[in-house]
Amino acid sequence: MMQIFTLHALKDNFVYVLAKNGEAAVIDPGEAAPVRKFLDHKRLKLKAILCTHHHQDHIGGVETLSRDGQIEVWASKADRERVPAITRIVEEGAALQLFGEDIRILEIPGHTLGQIAYYLPTADALFPGDTLFSGGCGRLFEGTPEQMFASLQKIKRLPASTRIYFGHEYTLRNLEFIKHELGQVPEDIFEYEQACKRKLHDGEPTSPTTLAQEIKINPFIYSGDVSEFRKWREARDLW
Image 1: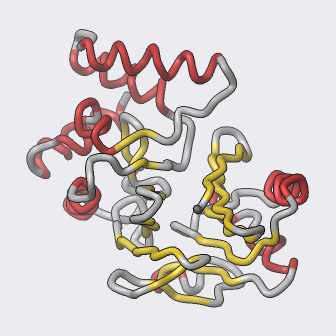
Image 2: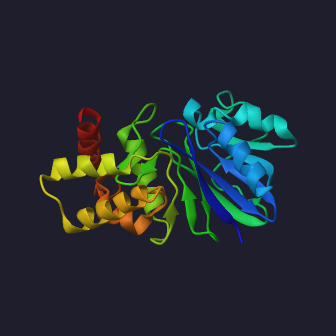
């Protein structure tokens, strides 16, 4: 059974380690030191680095970690020249496996043009980088509102039970924005906010969330059309 571990990096980044039978893959290592420390502590052998997009806070540790042996580095075709040490270009529709587990690639441009997500059906887990946060979505640095809306709708078609392992600890800030825009505190948001505060108080991350949770409280993914999505994104950019 695949295990998923959440590490902290930089100011508020999450780095994820997938482990099975003593081997590990790391997703979006913004820096190398916490990854190496964790792998040594757990006695795990690093085999692969999976990159969701090219931003430095997600790939800062790739070059250092890739020197540790025969390490595969996965990234999208659009990031061929923007992620160091790439050994495998991955794209949607490819049949891939990681430690004997099926893994699907979703191309989800918007935050960047080369943004991809890794979906593990058996683990019921999605790693969307900075496309989807709990209560929010990524800024549109390279893509258009139409692209981001389509990407979020693609994610929305996954099973509602899917656990979303997002890229940054932005949850409470995102919920503050939603409450500000709505002018009230709906019961489901209040309850979720309190649960997230308890997690943080106990030293736990708010990641993962679930797709069902986000469809309930996240206006970026429950928006009915691109016009509604655009209004929320513009409001968030100005807030």
